[in-house]
Length: 113
Length: 111
Image (cartoon, rainbow over all chains, first blue to last red; front, side):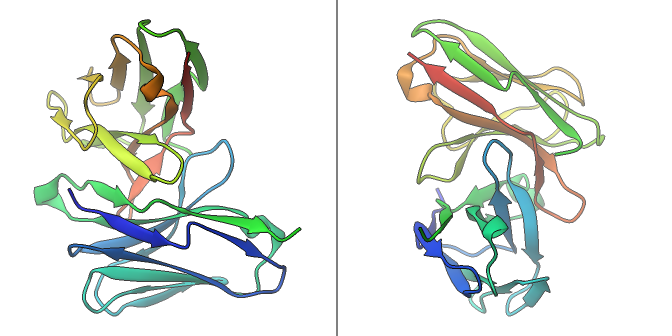
């Protein structure tokens, strides 16, 4: 099946830092999505990207849909403590593929001690 | 996680026991999905239902069965639990602008 490689697997942030994570795929998607998961909760959608080359922001978050449709990145600017959590990228094909999502392995964001 | 409700939130089973995870959505969607989440592996699709009365295997269906009881409800059954099925399970249904709305998860431990 399709595989999404997400990196880094984990990172430490210091308040005020900008952080970046990315996702690459062996095949194309029609939509890229970025989710955040807090402890004990299900993933919550942060940003959805609908076409190749699209750059979209949601507050301090910026994400881009790669031109090849096989990659995406997420940037968090001026990080704050509540940015801690697990971030997942997901790719979606539509209709013919049952609208199924394929997820990356996640990036765990932690606070520097 | 408004719209998708999962029960139970936590469960401990002995190897060989059976159980059913329940999921209900009140968004009147045709599609529903069951995923499992394991450290470093993201969420992997177990089974999905594109519409009432239909179910299809996902990436990791072995050891599971599902029932789409009606449009609202999609249950996941473990007939004979194994330690490898220790995981966090999420039910999902389509969100308004692509992607899914997820339930809050069921944390299952098989000992």
